[in-house]
Length: 348
Image (cartoon, rainbow, N blue to C red):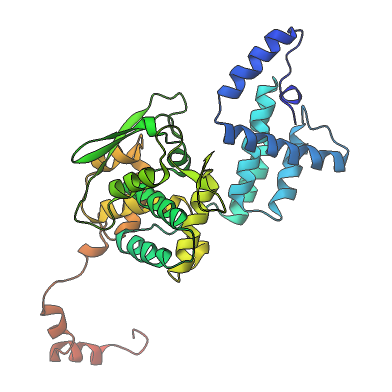
């Protein structure tokens, strides 16, 4: 689907239309824009099969599509499709479709019927990472590929990187210091305007799992001095000039999970980021310390990781039990036995 099929520009000249398209494409990350276009194409194909008009769509037509799509997909997937379809309509000059009563009722019904609890991937915490790296080293592969995959996982974990940000790193974004590596993240999921931020990875010279050492070794072995840090490796075992795509991060994580005899279905590229946050919470790091690395704007999402790390922390569940030996002695107390004897059977 072309941009012209989304943008309704009235009597704009071709030059003005081209400028408008360029600006609107920049308003969203390329992956998001591609996903939105795919959402609309799925909707348009369904409309064609039903003899309906996809743009502008009637609220009842969109609601019927959502109900159809929900038969074979989770509520979260339906909501994702809806977001893309609504964005395309808004971009084309048809806002307000999401406020149609039929659309609202359809989504409420789908969420009630299917539930909305997200399926969370397993966080790769410290010991899990060590096991996966050790097992990955035993998988037959060219030495350079092994080095890249090891570096990818160590950097992803150490910096709590989103996989897109990890793959977007350039050599020019790295500044090496005696005690650390500073990394400039130029753009991230919650920083689409590119303000950028710097995070630091600690040098750990006595550790075999030092991310900084792994990264410098990768760059030295490949001879990469500029451009993309993480690249694909050719079948001849050499680094190419092509930047690694974010899906490769997920494939590397799943490959390591299989090698370590874990169920790969539970892991994804996000497991490295989740693992850093979860392990940091377990080790007592403060919220502000974690947020400096993770880049979260609020603590709400971080608190989910912390609850997963220690479900009893900050709750009353650990406060309701009597500590010490007193509880054990009461259970065999003669007075208690007498009280039980006095109770009617119905009370028991």
